[in-house]
Structures are given as C-alpha cells and as structure tokens.
Length: 153
Ligand SMILES: C[S@@+](CC[C@H](N)C(=O)[O-])C[C@H]1O[C@@H](n2cnc3c(N)ncnc32)[C@H](O)[C@@H]1O
Image (cartoon, rainbow, N blue to C red; front, side, top):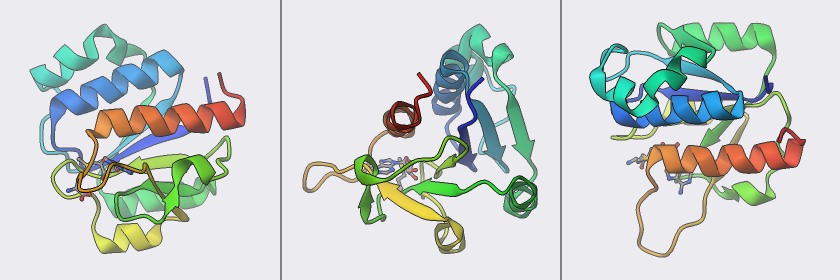
C-alpha cells in the first residue's frame, strides 16, 4: 500500500468516481471522499466503472469538509489541490510520499475557502482555450507524477 492518498471533493458523477476507485485499487492508494457526493455510493454507474476493484480500495468517507479537515489535522499531511486556477505546473512541484492529492467536483471545482486552505495548488498545463480535463484523467496524470517522484512504483 502506498502512502499517497487521493481525495475527491463532493464528486458529482458516479462513473468518474468509479474509474478513480479502480485506479486507486490498481495503484494501491487510499481514497477519501468528502461528502456530500452528488450520487449515492451504491450507484450502479459507480459500480459499473469501478467493477469488483472497488472492494479492494481503502475508502474513507468524510461527512463534510470540516470533518475531513479535522481528520487531516491529526494526520499532519499536506493537502495538494489540483486546480485549473493554480499557477504551478504539476511537473515542477516536489511531491511528498504522504501528500493528499485533492480533486474538485466535476461541475464547479472547489469553493474559494477550500482553494485557500490547500498547502499547495498545482495544474496540468493545457492547450490554449481549453477549460479542463476529465477528473479521472487529471487524477491519473497527477498521481502518476507523484508516484514517479516519490519512488512509489
Ligand atoms: C472537470 S474539472 C472541474 C471544472 C470546473 N469547472 C473548474 O473550473 O474547476 C474537475 C477537477 O479535475 C481536476 N482538473 C481538471 N483539469 C485540470 C487541470 N488542467 N489542472 C489541474 N486539475 C485539473 C481539478 O481537480 C478539477 O476540480
């Protein structure tokens, strides 16, 4: 089991979360879901995308942002936010092996107070005029770089 964690802020598309849970299962990463989510965690689209991989993910559900932050304070881990509004390219950022990599909701990213709370904010450079990547794709790219840098593969 790797020590890096993936956190999803109020995810609203079950299929994306299922895909990320499958990614986490395959790479040996724990996942934090900061609720409320826009779907029930028993959603069939989540199960279809995550398949039987979901059963092997270490999944922690946090009732809300405040509860997540209380839990994080006890663990003393850094919160690294992936945001299209960030200024630091993810390839230049120095990851730690116990970072929590936070991804925003599909519809609206994260609110300002969450953006401000992060210890670091990083982005994946995109071609001019493009708005954002699919969250599962963004997660795979950033997790891949974090694992490469920290020797987790
Ligand atoms: C579909 S995007 C959210 C789009 C939302 N309208 C916004 O502006 O934040 C869902 C999440 O994927 C991640 N993401 C997508 N593209 C990204 C990029 N180019 N750089 C960093 N994170 C990205 C972010 O965590 C984002 O909150």
